[in-house]
Length: 303
Ligand SMILES: N[C@@H](CCC(=O)N[C@@H](CSS)C(=O)NCC(=O)O)C(=O)O
Image 1 (cartoon, rainbow, N blue to C red):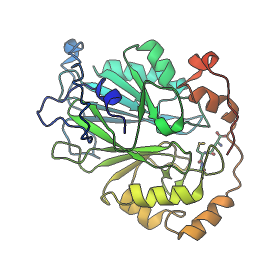
Image 2 (image 1 turned 180 degrees about the vertical axis):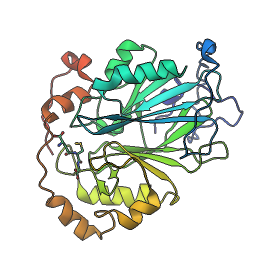
Image 3 (image 1 turned 60 degrees about the horizontal axis):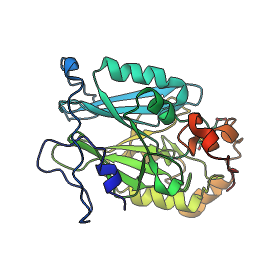
Image 4 (image 1 turned 180 degrees about the horizontal axis):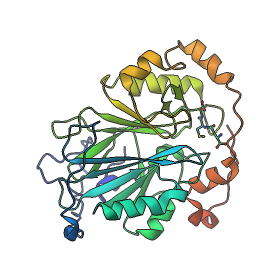
């Protein structure tokens, strides 16, 4: 598991309880990001009804053409107000950056849950507009990014952190980011499931190394084992939902409540058309966006 890469770029928590899940002796002290945005210190601590942490600022943002959710999280109790975006979309980058600025945040990470097939990620574009930002994706995705994260990694933003859980099945490199388990972390926990779990659904498994067997195992071992009140925040919604919980999906998800055999049969018979953007989106997303595409030849989108 890679730790150092992630550690190099974190905004340090102020408490002495800063830790990483590794026992590796290769522990490097990351540079503390200083409060460049001190003039924005009037910004109040925003919270949502979903979390009891007064530290967490949380926003759910929507891109309507691809029905994609982008999530903004920040530690507003930290002097720097370090923030991250999960699954930004290229088309809504300006909106997201404006929001970050208006709220007085310092964006440190632009993260992906996986290589999306239906839209181009905003991570590369964000980096061109805010050069200090680091792009993040899983190592298993075989994509290009500043930080290639692995299962078990902890991604700190201020005193808060996200835990990385590998949830392959929709694609080989899918991960779920889960808010930390600890006294100062948001309660209930929040799981950013990408396309592994959608509300009352799940990601398709018919391309990009997808596997219904693997998806079933991932969800049941990595997501449905979280506390039942854990909030589920997916990367897409096609039905008008915004949030669910682990307990709710364990009871009512029409695919994932079935046994593995029935689940596989459902997934094999979805008969969904390929995403319209797939031939543009996948090669672009392998390099975190269209801006870097000339550096790497397009690869075929095979299962
Ligand atoms: N019509 C859309 C693509 C819709 C689609 O295939 N969504 C994916 C997630 S994005 S690759 C999916 O897994 N859907 C599961 C489902 O049950 O709908 C387009 O053309 O972009």
